[in-house]
Length: 105
Image 1 (spheres, helix red, strand yellow):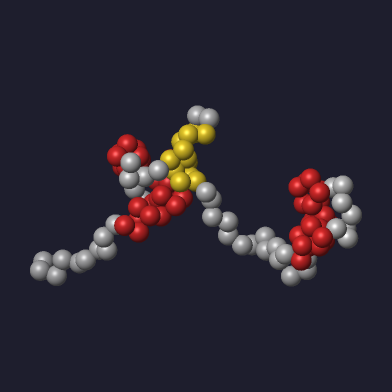
Image 2 (cartoon, rainbow, N blue to C red):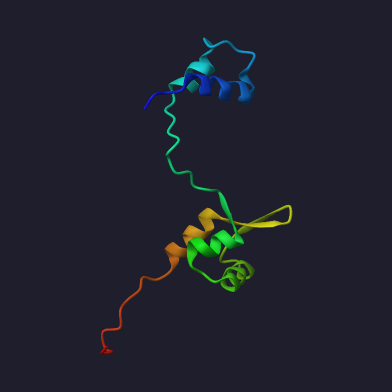
């Protein structure tokens, strides 16, 4: 993959380093970092709707878990955002599914 130096320079400018020259050590460090636009970015938090879709838990179940404190969320304006780490920990804490071998199908 070809590294886009023009894009990197615009990022440096946007980050407030626009007073620097391309020879500045911060610019060199940024340009040396690998950039992969296809790399998945994990969100810090999900809306209630997205948390329902991602986890498979019902909407009322998500609200019940929030009320009980088992699931952590933040309010940002009028939006309730379920924290990614909290949702992942909830799923990780759940017991593994064990098939019922006594019942015939």
